[in-house]
Image 1 (cartoon, helix red, strand yellow):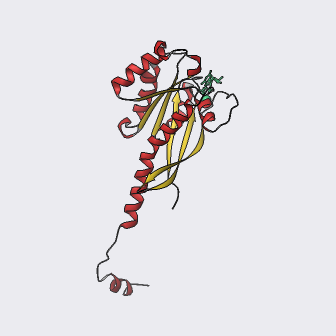
Image 2: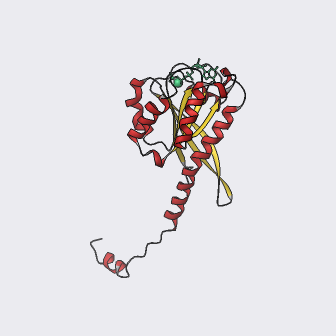
Length: 205
Ligand SMILES: Nc1nc2c(ncn2[C@@H]2O[C@H](COP(=O)(O)OP(=O)(O)OP(=O)(O)O)[C@@H](O)[C@H]2O)c(=O)[nH]1
Ligand SMILES: [Mg+2]
């Protein structure tokens, strides 16, 4: 049986650190160039299904923050089951997460049917999160809207591992749905009417 694949993507303004985060997931460290359109990476994951470990894959799309590319990436975003919206803890308008990116997501899909994760990046540049205006603003909105909110640095420490684990956990829900639907498909029994054989043998062939 083919390994199921769950599609996911990373959205957010230019230069917030989306590509650097994906490179950290893959343990590659070169400084990224601005993304043009979109790229994708494959991540391997496992989930416990009916008492045993089953593998699945996550196809994770890295998207350009530049507005002009959104029409190109929209058709990929539509098919994603997990969406990470990233923002910088140190620059830009943190409310873009909701007024721009979440609105775009809701315009192309039913946000209740997917898993959303909001991620504040460049945590190494912040001394105290509890005094960080971007963090506090986004956190307040996430609590109101009951959204997952995490922070990380793609440069220092291992906080990106926690984000990767969370991504895998969110995606595993959809992998399990695929296992369940495969199981149901396999167990369907089709009973043919008793005269089918006669009808066929009396036909033209
Ligand atoms: N200090 C610090 N710098 C970071 C971090 N993540 C990314 N950067 C830097 O921020 C700059 C932009 O990072 P990218 O990953 O290219 O940003 P992006 O969101 O992919 O940008 P676009 O592709 O243009 O949408 C690069 O110089 C990165 O090295 C981080 O966690 N900490
Ligand atoms: Mg990029």
